[in-house]
Length: 236
Image (cartoon, rainbow, N blue to C red; front, side, top):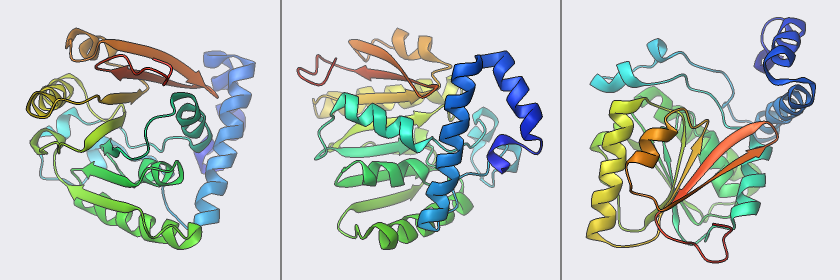
């Protein structure tokens, strides 16, 4: 299976060495489920893409990370834990092929926005959304794929739940957080940031934009969830 690499046995030994036996089996199980996710919906979201292979005119390409698909079962497990309001707009920062957009639709969000600086990936994401909608019969969800560098994107007043899977490093992250701060300053509201594989957690914490953060590890996948105020009954 491609997701496990060209040599599954070598992948298995390497992953056991790095993560331990229990987490390796969790990762493998979720990998098989993700392959089935694409097969079931007729979508194309799995293949990883090196930053050098991304087609974009953005100067921030040098700050981008690998494209990789967020695993479906850990994402849904996190959504069940958080119980975020589904009437708020969900925004995927660095949407890639649109896997998280599909998962957010499946999680019940009524409006989902994906921001992606690579036009070819935007086209793939749009195709994936249409295929997913037909397979799941969910035409009423409002979905928007925006071709834009995240630092140039103007965050809208109804956008409250932000997601990112380690899409960029410090310079872009800092500007993105500042854009969130400006948006909340102009339209005060509660926002959440879900950071999958939080490599730059310290930058988010030092921004002082969020008053709470909580780490979740679900099925071997690490998320950090930030909020700018106490969220009452939503486990924050």
